[in-house]
Length: 93
Image (cartoon, rainbow, N blue to C red; front, top):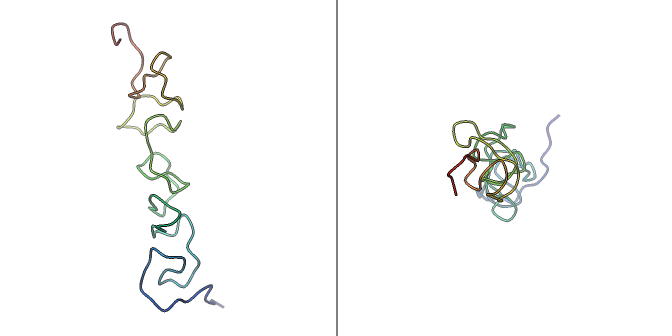
């Protein structure tokens, strides 16, 4: 039996209670404005929205194929992966 977890009577999917009447949570497909940067309702950390509903970025430690060639989880350009998420190579400065 399905029951409502909340019902605030409005159609705002970005608040604590979206139209689904289920409490807002990461992964529900609605961007909860107070707590999330994104929410694509999938578990693919290789896309632009991470599983924790934060936007992916170079240096977050998660490789996004086709976008980054490496991502070692830091923004130090002097190690094996540059701060532009490219493999370090001779002559890259």
